[in-house]
Length: 286
Image 1 (cartoon, rainbow, N blue to C red):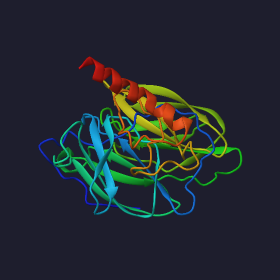
Image 2 (cartoon, rainbow, N blue to C red):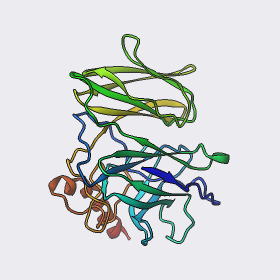
Image 3 (cartoon, rainbow, N blue to C red):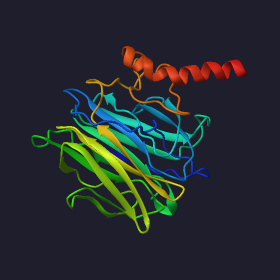
Image 4 (cartoon, one colour):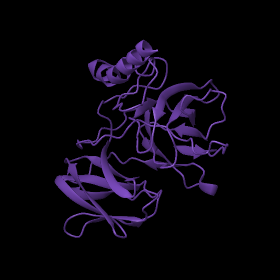
């Protein structure tokens, strides 16, 4: 997958990327895309950027809002895509579709590959910049899992992440860095995060055969580590389009359009109930 043409700075450069809230996840054996499809998810790692809406469409077709109101530290679930080119753009939450996007990308999807598009405020003059990374869902050696770190904390930074027995997952990683994967033994892996005098700890549950990304974010000068599973909970995540859904954890103020959150069984139904109930309540309150 190749990423092209990003960064369309506007007067609202602080209004930038979109995602689902990243919730701590217990890693399980990674499931990758099958023949004929690719997977993509998007991560909002821009601390100064308020919630945004994300638009998506096959290249050359009209864009549609697929997710509304997502903020810093969020990552979308995977969506399946047919191989080909797509347009993805981000606008301030609830802005008109005619508003110039704070970030725009043309994405080329290849079959049987999984990717994360991570958006940081590390472009020229702190504009938004998308970084495309490959999610390695191949099997690690027996009894091990695979762990990497995405450094999404601009302040404090850089950040080091260390585990037990001299394990180093990140050494002075700068804001916007994604480390290579490291194989670790299965089980609960305690991590220590350090940036100067700022320290934090986290535990990562590593299942055999799993791949995990540890997101490092900031909260009022403190560090937070959130492990998320690489690979989908569903063997076949829904496809982006009028017939498909989001397929993941929808939390807080994030809302998905009804067509986007539609129907892949009870699992997806449960995922959209919270935002749906919120909409109903908002409607009654008007």
